[in-house]
Amino acid sequence: MSEYPEDLRYLDSHEYVRLDGEIATIGITEFAVKELGDIVFVELPEIGDALEKGETFGSIESVKAVESLTSPVTGTVVERNEPLLDDPEVVSDEPYSEGWLVKVRVDNPDELEDALTADEYRALVEGE
Image (tube, rainbow, N blue to C red; front, side):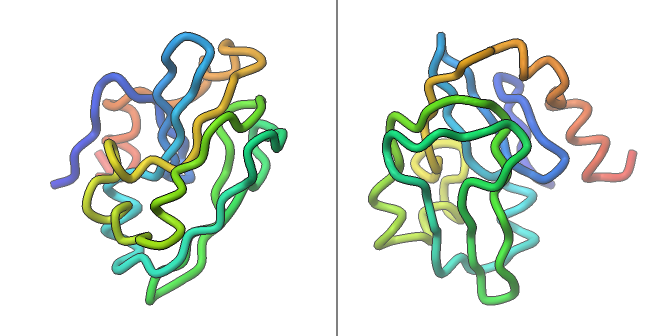
């Protein structure tokens, strides 16, 4: 059974977001990691890049597939997880801590109102 931290919001495309003030930390869920298998490559935006809610901002590649990453918010990338570029399997090991992807200065926090809660995401992926 996968873990779904209560302090996160989720997209049905399996990204999560943790909002701390105006900074959103974005990653992929443990469920997505299990579905993908061994992660071999991560493509991330550059610091200063603008992200649009619902738009692709990078990709993650496993031995099974390449998946696009969808932004849950509109804003500007203020940090990216550089160690993942050389060691992408960290996403597999620690998706909610060391395996985050980018940090974004959010333009409008209200955009997260339609993101899923942990219970809603659990119901989605576990078919409840």
